Amino acid sequence: MLVLKLGGSVVTHKDKPFTPHIGNIIRLAAEIAHASAQPLVVVHGGGSYGHPLATEYRIAEGYREPRQLAGFSETHQAMVELNGLIVRGLLDAGVPAFSVAPSSFLATEGRRITGMDLQVVEGLMESGLVPVLYGDAVHDTQQGFAILSGDQLAVKLANGLGAERLVLGSDVDGVFTADPKLDEGARLILELSLSDQGGEAEIGDALDTDVTGGMQGKMAEAAEAVEAGIEVLLVNATVEGRVGAALRGENVIGTVLKR
Amino acid sequence: MLVLKLGGSVVTHKDKPFTPHIGNIIRLAAEIAHASAQPLVVVHGGGSYGHPLATEYRIAEGYREPRQLAGFSETHQAMVELNGLIVRGLLDAGVPAFSVAPSSFLATEGRRITGMDLQVVEGLMESGLVPVLYGDAVHDTQQGFAILSGDQLAVKLANGLGAERLVLGSDVDGVFTADPKLDEGARLILELSLSDQGGEAEIGDALDTDVTGGMQGKMAEAAEAVEAGIEVLLVNATVEGRVGAALRGENVIGTVLKR
Image: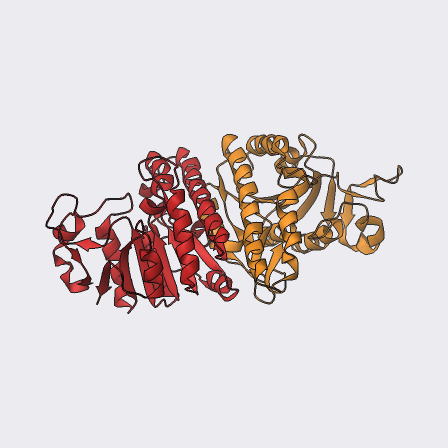
């Protein structure tokens, strides 16, 4: 089975609050439909839906004052709204997508998933459905609540469900030798083994940051899946055809993470 | 703790597809806010949001053909939309409501909940939140999928969470000796013990039916909570003040179910 993560910068206009990127959503839904790669689980990020409220109410830091309770709920509701648009796009393309709310079935412990019951997700997949989950505002057993990133969730799902491949789609081509926006000589790294990750400054600064961690965070999360023997592929989901090719297992521009 | 169920005929215009009863939603949100009855869990029905799609795709009967998969998903999405309006109403009234999707954390077995992990719901309540759940299209381990009624869910939650009181709000005053719409001599039964339920024809036909079972089904569900020692109260949630009074434990027009 495959797990596909679509970053918040792909499914939303990241600089415009609560603005979905309908063009990307519809195009990716068609790519997913044509790839016919099932069983499949899709996870998406929050982008401009998740961040404004999470930041305003300081949800990631955990519970501090009662007014955050409404903010916690509203952050989740914003994600529900974005998720509804993505499920709608997938259904319209013929993908039997089914929404699954992370905050309804899991809690973090100090911002980390330490265990989750995957029976419902597995049951939905057995019925032929494609569960669609998302980065979410979740209950945290230590700090009251936390922001669960789509990256952490995608990796835990890939590990828990025994995925063959985890495709991480963002708005960059993969991992570069330097920031491609600042350095003309930056080269895309086609294969990266975990042991190469020493040069974090080289990699980490290359990419856009995120309240839930930029590429450095993504690499740290992904390492868990790579260690479990899952093929992890970083691709640019804003470029037509790449997610489709990655789902079909074809050669595609991107970075493959290896042990 | 208390569990409050609001029927689909209360939160929607039952005869107009996908039409919320915003007046009732806002009024009830204020009643819940003023009752200050916490810990509290709210469950709502589907009314005109849940039934049209569930009926069209024959979701309650379980999986028969692939086109039902999209219908199953759309039935859930319709409930998500209604739930969003109710959570919005509660938040606006100052109730720290938090949406919990039943289909994300439980599956039925032959249309019945045989067990559910309440850790997340309990965790949210410990944080001071009011979980808001609903009748939903859920995975069923026997028939692929099923319709879980809000009544069944409310009773299972009341039992699982050890509720003191379960308030079932519908659009009728309670259980009558005959159908009050047809028989002028019909009297409201203020207290009903389970052993009186032999005369089902007397009670069962009195009330509006539902794809998930009419009053007879409600009584059968409620019996489980009554047997566990939970006070179950049937009230008319379309009449101002009754839900508020029931939550505060005051005397109110309705039917109390006793062992």
